Amino acid sequence: MGMGRGLAGVGRGIREDRRLMRGMRLMRGMGHRNPRGWALWVAAVALCLAGPAQAGAVTPYTFVQSFGTQGNGNGQLSIPIGVARDSSGNVWVADCYNSRIQEFTGTGGWLKAIGGPVPGTGNGQFSYPIGVAFDSSGNLWVADFWNHRLQQFDSAGGWLKTVGGSGTGNGQFRRPCGVAVDSSGNLWVTDYDNHRVQKFDSNGNYYSGHHLCSFRRANSV
Image 1 (cartoon, rainbow, N blue to C red):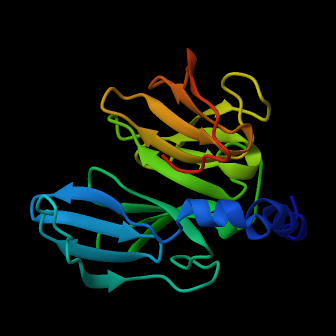
Image 2 (image 1 turned 30 degrees about the horizontal axis):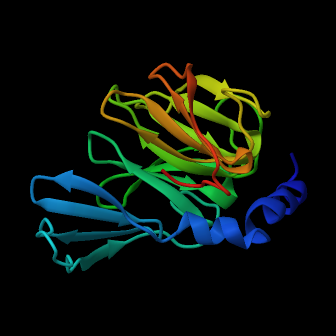
């Protein structure tokens, strides 16, 4: 896919769809527990640390660090959205407009990129990825927005499998956005243009009869 076509496509799906942009809450942090308290990574990308919140209290997060500048070079970002931390403390970012996933150390040092910087449809390539999450085995799941699928990678970034494809049937997607893993290892995926959330087991198999519907446009879990 050429860059012009890709930008036109994401214009349809993101830039011109203000409902999606509002619903995504692009700058909302994702909390991760660590021995010293709560670490909060936001898609800027920035790190904030504070103690655990008390019941009924507002946690006063203190800014610590940010990294990344606009661009498509190593460590640069263009509309970063999803962010997740692995068991080693490294940070993985869905670099949406660069159609890639980038890995950074816990202090923001660049490690590697998967895919990009232009959209693609092959294994390990992306077309504007959005959601990222790690499962209990340390594998990374990516919601590959314009390819209408999930992709799974090992802890080193090696491609493992693809789940889904374009469609309205069970286990198919139309612009998946958010992905999350529950305590049992099941995957929950917001299927944006199918107006539903779908559930999969840890291997990516659709749970028969398990989808939540009647959403206007679900985009995060």
